[in-house]
Length: 365
Image (cartoon, rainbow, N blue to C red):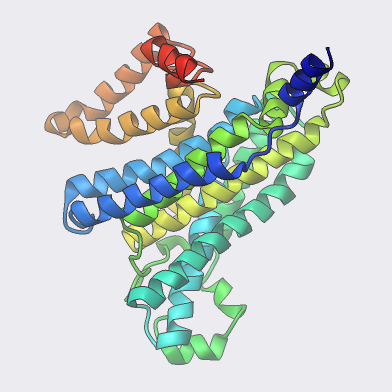
């Protein structure tokens, strides 16, 4: 009996988000795969298919990160593009003005430039996460439509504040004259962060899919951890979760912060792919695009978000031969999908929990 109780206790023991073998092994495999893809595929700057593949990676990060809020905890955030914009502008400020400070120009600079870009991505995620905490702490006490309105307002506030900034500085003398933090007021305004030089284009296949790997492994481990169980409990029945001792507001804020962190990284990748950021393209319509990916894939399904991101990135490009009716066909496809499969492609389950995959994984366990 003692042995049985001991085994039962081990089953109920808290599951950490980061368990070294289960976290580091897929992480290392994903990074190796990202390196191989970078070596094999043409540059996204010169090849359309590689660019689409790169866009898929960025959209996967956005969809999976929003799924942590809308899917795992059952909330409804409509301001995800706001965190993407915050991360993109934060990283662009670091690489653009940092390059002026270090090298006198904002061109790409090999290994040292890529190291600066990596630090900028992490900084973008942290800035977005900090803002997510400030926004989430008061607003996530709300539910349903009220939360959606608050997050939508946040995204619009970010867009308007960026539009009020000054044109980008283009000379080393002006950059040194203004200094930090003065350069934060020179983000391009309504014309966007572009100008004579533009943002250094560091984003490539490797960086995109290395961060995709981190996002997917983190989301999967989080879903199976004690944090994830608390998220799902809040989604299923918030009152019951509160009665069982789950601090629902803390749980929702935690999910909001983690989602904002990865959205900030996606914004950094996006800005350093195109070489420019424009507040008009990072408004509420961009948030709706990400929401569609989450709903189409299945609220709470990590693999569903990945599949939906792939489909909705490729579909507009595949419909280019019928350019005049492309958006009509695109919209009709979404409507038919929602009628035939309202719960999304995988619902709340993962791809390995379905059909032959389920038998394989159950036998492996």
